[in-house]
Amino acid sequence: TSGGDIVLEVTGLSKHFGGLKAVDGVDIAVKRGGVHALIGPNGSGKTTTLNVLSGLYKATAGRIVLDGTDITNMAPHQRTAAGLGRTFQNIRLFRSMTALENVEIGAERPGNTMIGKGEDALTERAMEALTFVGLGNRANELISSFSYGHQRLIEIARALASNPTLLLLDEPAAGLNSTEKLELHELLKRIAAQGLTILIIDHDMTLVSEAAQHITVLNFGRRIADGESMAVLRHPDVVSAYLGS
Ligand code: ADP
Image (cartoon, rainbow, N blue to C red; front, side):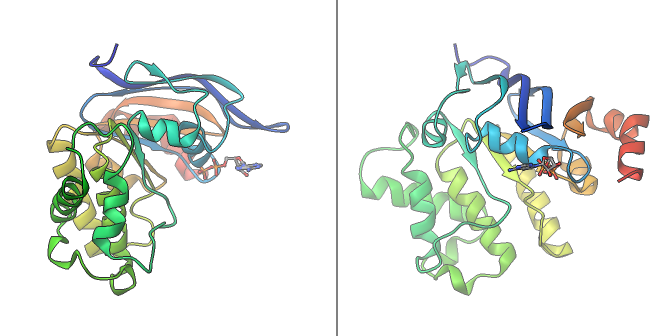
């Protein structure tokens, strides 16, 4: 059933922590190709949504379908195998390993049918992903020798090397300086130009307003707006949610 227009279909998603409805009946439909952003003020439920999508938390209610496959009850590693790639807000790279070795781990994903068999194919795919983010010439350097911004790019390269159906980016601009933010924005555009689908979580409207074509806005765990970026950002409920935060 894969190959449809909608890559990720989330319906009625809820995550409650005791009496707190962190996510409350949220619908999200991510179209194939391009950048879709999930935004909202602090505490609106973005991180919780992402953690339910990637399987870190079990949904209280609702359904998550990735490219025709129901992944609602899958473990995180099964979702990765099903084509869900992600990065983390706090960078998770192996610091005692090289950039290339870290990215090879991504390429090794079970279910990555886009690469051939064997070590050479993994290395080749990892090199390709590192080169794509602009760090191919530093492949053999240890993670500790890279700036914070470049470590974030390496994390994105690791996710890209797995050839995901959907790439989830958790606040990729967090901790980056303005130059690095511009580089990131340019990279997102190049990823989208390759036809890959990205769901980006961010509280900062600036990056997403330029990078995303489609925006879903959460407030207090509920979806308050959804649609084409410019229209959503002008929506009175969105403006007041951000002013009030
Ligand atoms: P955002 O990412 O938009 O800032 P979060 O998803 O982190 O929002 O938080 C949404 C709400 O859920 C907040 O009120 C937060 O305090 C609460 N919350 C998040 N994680 C937990 C948890 N593990 N246990 C209890 N409450 C949580």
